[in-house]
Structure formats: structure tokens, C-alpha cells
Image (cartoon, rainbow, N blue to C red; front, side, top):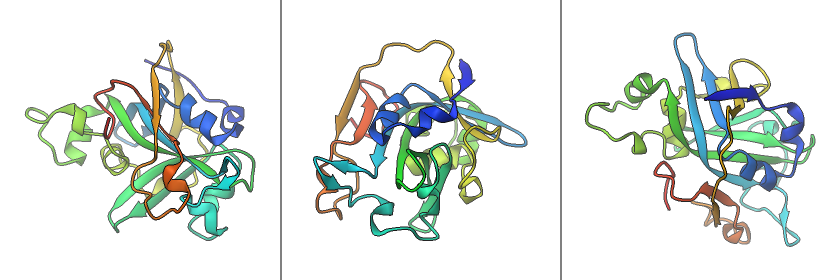
Length: 205
């Protein structure tokens, strides 16, 4: 089910390339009591340029701040931030140091730690569908116990990492504009949301 960890060099590629490559890979969070794992089915790329236009939807667009500092590190660390004062979002930093690029993990298919995931989400696993357990960035972080404590971790370490599946299957990958970025004049149209077509675990078709 879970193969080897991603090597550091894989994170140094173009942000959109990494966003596509992450599909089918496994997000793993090891806590004191649980090993959480989920197959990544949906991502969004942030940073860089599209047809010459800088990505004004990226947190890094307005420069380096205390909050966005992880985005300016070398590829291969985590960037976890809070939204609405209550939900966390997990990102994979990509590219070279200073590039300000990261991939948002939007949805995963739960693989291990499901009982704890249901409990963390306050869902009854006897009556609730697993399809709604981790089908959103805030949902998956709550389910997998990913918080600000996991911000700026080395993804080649043992606590939070990306692994290859034991056997990669061919994927049908679709793309669309990113979700909830209407504030961005140009970036709201960038087709940088990637997802596994026909997966029941994505946030939306």
C-alpha cells in the first residue's frame, strides 16, 4: 500500500508538475498513537507564472512574511496555515529556495487510521460515508491531525511525508480553475487544480 518516501529532488520540480505527480501518491502523518495515510486525489498549484502572468492567488504573491516563510524554503517542506480561524490547510513546498511555490493538498482517499479519522471529524463511522471524510483541505487536516504544529516540517522526515504507492496505476487526470480564489484578478482563471477523474473522494467533480 505504502512504498518508499519521495526523494528530496522530486520536490524541486515545477509546481504544476509536482501537483500532478502527487496524484496517486500517499500522504502519511505519524502521531504517537496513529499512522494516518491517504491517497492524494486532488491538488492545486500556487506560485510561478502562467502565460507570463504571476500567480496573484498565491500567498507568496505579496512577498515574504512570517506566515509565508515556508513557501520560500527549498522544495520538500510543509506549509500549514489556518483559515477562518479554525481549519488548517496542508501544502507541499516545491521548487528552489526563494521561488514561493507550493501545492495545496485538497483531498485524499483514506487508507489507514480511519477509526481515528472519523472520531477526529466527529463522524459516526457506522452511518457516515468515507467519501465525505477527507474531501476537502480542512477536512483532511482535521481527520489526519495536521495542525500548525506540522508547519515547516521536512517532508523527508518520519513525522509527515509523501510516499509512493507500492504499485502506481495509470491515472486519468483532469484539471480546472482553482477553488475559492475569486479574489485573484488573473489567477482565478489558471487551470491549476488537478484531480483524479471519477474519484469519489474529490471535493467536487
